[in-house]
Image 1 (cartoon, one colour):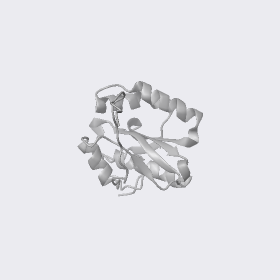
Image 2: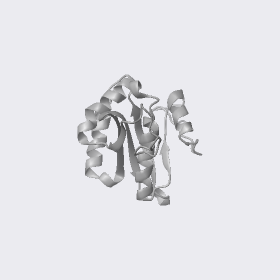
Image 3: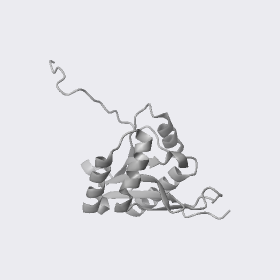
Image 4: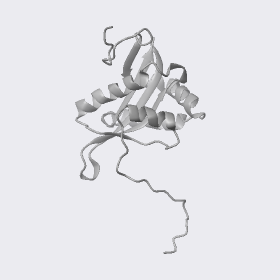
Length: 164
């Protein structure tokens, strides 16, 4: 089997898999995939991300995975430019694969495409966050080499009693 564009050996189900930068015209397909995964439309979120990326393209990496020319997966990444004296890193904001296309290697291909761009930009770390109850996504992240970060996120309701 010859490797495909992602370096992964092609098989019958992956032979038409391509990875490319997302384009403005992909917005509706991304929202459709995300809605199928989350059960609600986040059109506004994706639209604002697209607007920001068009204004500051060096700060964003958007990759799509297609099967037979049809968008079946996406990943949105923000490049963080070394804030607070730290080396540049990247934050994976959103990733999704059409539920009918899981198991075809799209998630791996998407992350491989992001890694290629990050290496080119000199970024050595990719971070993300998710709900701890999302076992499928946590399993994917673990398989992809993500580890728990030594950071604790705290939250509280607004207006909580501040009596010290």
